[in-house]
Image (tube, rainbow, N blue to C red; front, side, top):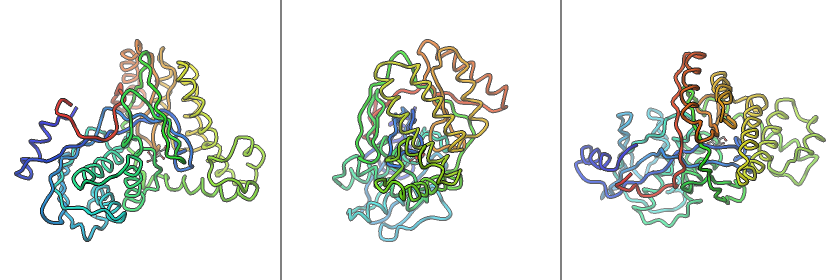
Length: 388
Ligand code: GLA
């Protein structure tokens, strides 16, 4: 866990001055509802207890200096000429947020920033959204901007869409901005409305990192999104009322699915069935029916693997191994796909055995290591407190 005292010291060493502010924005794990957000659908993520920290001090000029201490790199730019950086792809998350704020008409002053994070990068736990939201929030506080959590999330998403080039949905930025301690959020991505759902005490959310890394920009994420849009365009001829896959039912697909190219039908079927699974799984969790919740996680994984085709063999192995442990209710890949992490719901008294068994078997079967986190749900972005 990163601590504020160390971050303050690192900032002082780098800039020879104290930070005025340190903020933290959490990563996330999505329990269920994958690739539904950009289809105006439902997601059910949790803000995790790993976060990106930004220490900041305003400057008297219009320069932004950034020290990314985890990777030992720096970036510098002027507020009046914010452009994409070709040499430093990581810097585009920060430049993109600044650009989004400026385009939205906010007045910003220059700043020195120091960034550090314990969200693993490229693991499907939203290290990018945590960075964007933390940077946006630091600017918001220092420049006394009046942004609601949803607005901050939208600006951060805009940065990723326009500067990084990933046509991501709103889930990651929304949960990083608005997550709630000890709760998951059922987010309606069309209405941008969220309902907190308390997490159980007697079952734990366990994340297993496959150590296979993904890269959204090149991984087919944007292609999946385009396929969903194609499905809507084609189905609209029969179903003029629809504007997104959110509006399509399973009965609609049974009736008109044959009009779609087979791959497009598979993508649409994943999204339509996944939306239904999210709503059913929330109801199951609310009545403490972990068995049904776990079944829905398993079905979600099957759908991502076979219909959306975003899993990889190492992840499938990890999911199978998890399900084989007594006390594991269900397991699935989490996040954008093509590697990253799995999420499992595990009975609290089985967690220790789960960790040992899965780690050993994964090493034996794949030669890879898994890092396992038993996760607790944290609040969304805010000032980092000294006791953290
Ligand atoms: C990534 C994106 C999200 C969402 C997930 C898949 O994390 O950033 O918007 O689409 O993939 O559910």
